[in-house]
Image (cartoon, rainbow, N blue to C red):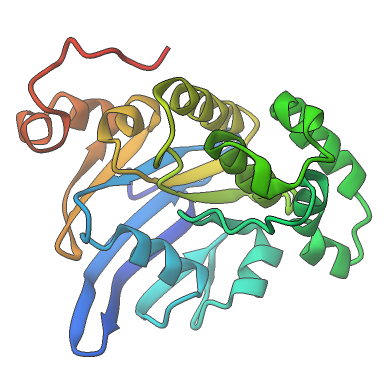
Amino acid sequence: MNASEEKLLEVRNLHVAYGKVEALQGVSLAIAKGRMGQIVTVIGPNGAGKTTLLSAIMGLLPSRGEIFFAGELEPVPEVGRMVRRGMNLVPEKRELFAEMSVEDNLILGAFQRYRQGYRDHDRSLREVFALFPRLLERRRQRAGTLSGGERQMVAIGRALMAQPTLLMLDEPSLGLAPLVVREIFRIIVELRKRGVSILLVEQNARAALQVADYAYVIETGGIVMEGQAENLRNDPRVIEAYLGLGQHQEKLA
């Protein structure tokens, strides 16, 4: 990433430890600020520290290092403050309220904005339903009765109700059928067009590198490669480690 670019998010020398085990070891990354959103992906094997990275940025885990968001240092990131400032996280487990309706789950995502005095949740809800027409059809249905893909849509929609400028997605394709994965990734690209930047943690490296602008490869708690996503997609080391040799495999439409 160009050092002169203004940054929406900048993480410098981030360390996270679980007891004596250091899960992140000096991780640095950035997402550029601009009129159009940017998709930055972090790929790597299981246990490399991808989820830990998102959790630390969001303030769910204690960390050492520097986290700048929208030009301001966050000495101790705190979830509520980060949401108020325009950051949101869709966790890997989605964490919906199973007994509540789709619509009520979505409205909960606007809670912080409501506390700040905003009364625009109806407009936000319409925008989410326009993005996910299937959720409009199921708005009265209990979230616990939805398919995996529909639950992922609700989780993303709920995060969007907070009107974030940066949306962090933790393994959005996990456990989903290929057709649903393609739909989710199309939505990610659409969000970028609407000015939402995305920090995408994804084990499906092929799909992530197809939609991302910039990419980082993390292994054993540290960044081992970074660059334009297109360049990493064609890098022999990435192909061998994460994409396999089957370049003929189907791409996202």
